[in-house]
Image (cartoon, rainbow, N blue to C red):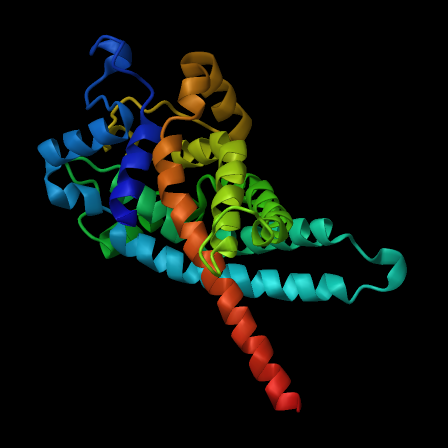
Length: 291
């Protein structure tokens, strides 16, 4: 179910107009989406079921690679910070924030070309800009050069550093609270609940930067060929944020937030539950090996 949610979110984030505006507004020549369910219905009506799975292959590669790099980096940075001598010892919350931020920056940079491809395929309407992944790679390399694969990376890192820092700091703080919660949580689910809450808080805090990243990712020679044909030209993070705020207001900054949370919250719950169990198994195996 992740792929359809990705497509819906991206379509909403790239939209600069709403249903309250006339169809001729800003040279509109494309669909006008409203809400998660409305967008789902319109994509099904206009493009069929396959429209909801555009960009799924680079997205799957992105998730697999991102998770591996993220948790490897988080564990390595966290262990490194814990070995600092006494005068430089950090509080656990600071340790979690720095480790999470560093892990997010590393994973985002390594996997960014896949993220860009996922966005561009999801932004395609019935008129295909790219016919295949190989064709998209050749086109970007030919017309935009190596830097074309990293359009919006600054916004991506600017978003992921505070996001992952806030996520892991919130998660580590919430985990003991949830474990001792009087709420009737199923056995072993406190990690998952802490992951959901941490994800919602951190995702909401940095969401405008996520929207900025998406707008920058579709810049280039094919900008006017995507499903939204009136995407403005943006040249940087601050310029994009200012333009969205000036012309679209707060709603423009947070378009697609609901569907983003629907995707991120359960994914974070499963990820953190799995991470904690995997770490527990590895620690137990390490102890058994030392005995």
